[in-house]
Amino acid sequence: MKIQLQVDEKYQELEVEIRTPQYDQHVEQIMRQLQAPQKIEAYRDQKIHMLHVNDIIYIYSEAGKVYFQTEVEELLTKLKLYEVEKIFSNDFVRINKSMLVNLNHIQHMELNILNATRLVLSCDFTVPVSRNYLKLLKQRLGIGGQS
Amino acid sequence: MKQILRIMLISIGISLSTSYIFMTLSIGDYAMTQDDLVKQIYVAIICGVIIGIATLIFYYTTWSFIIQTVCHFSIVTSTVIIIGYYAQWYEPVRSEFLLVLLNIVVVYIVIWLMVYYFSKGEVQEINEALKKRKEEKDT
Image (cartoon, rainbow over all chains, first blue to last red; front, side, top):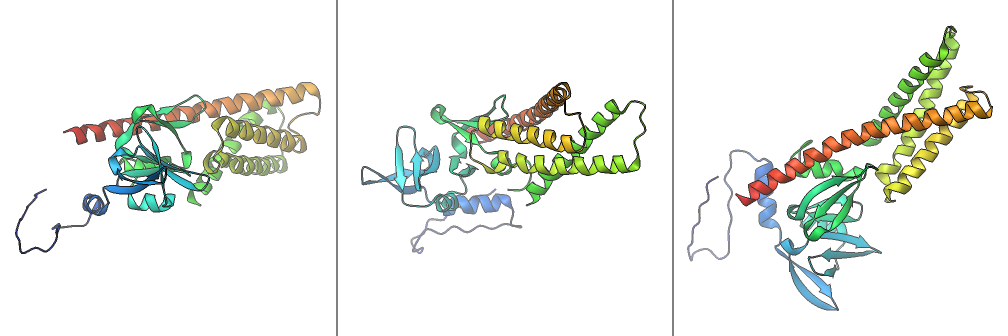
């Protein structure tokens, strides 16, 4: 992949142009990455915090509210889980009905004797993976079908 | 919908295979009539459908795995015992009933182990993909 940078005062704003012989997964991923916001509003003690996407380990919904879990704290968002899922579709993957995990924070997956699968994340957080979403996780990791 | 259909077909397949194995083991020198055979196939398919529906517990509920397993095992056991009674798989005496129960437990454990080894392979594949992803990010 060639990267060209043009710095010229004639441009009014930042422009990114992609030239490609075909539209494929790789191009789609680059576009998603470019479009995804790097920071998101979150609330704690009724104060607004700007949270960097990489600081969020997982996102979960509980009793109708959606929370961002970071290394040290939980912050509330006013968005619905499906909205967050759409915004961060490049970095996060749904692993059960009420949870999204940051792909960059997954350490490994474990299987117990009861056939239950769970993900071990950064800071030793462990989260259950529903069998129903295992296929989606595999797709996002580039195995078991198209993403 | 595709996934539900897949689960149902696997369940019917396991039910038919198990029924066939038990018929072969228990029939001895007795010649089974065509009607009996067709009846047993229907019964196995009904069992498979009910157990298939019960298996959806693992896919569509948010209960803990222990609760899911206990519910699934209870439904499987009740289904086989009730259907088995009407299909005359066993005589309604205590010893036969206990034997059926033992068979259910053995078949359940065997299938459970098969699923476990399949899942183990799947988890290994995911861990390898995660490792590869990390290596690519680091370089």
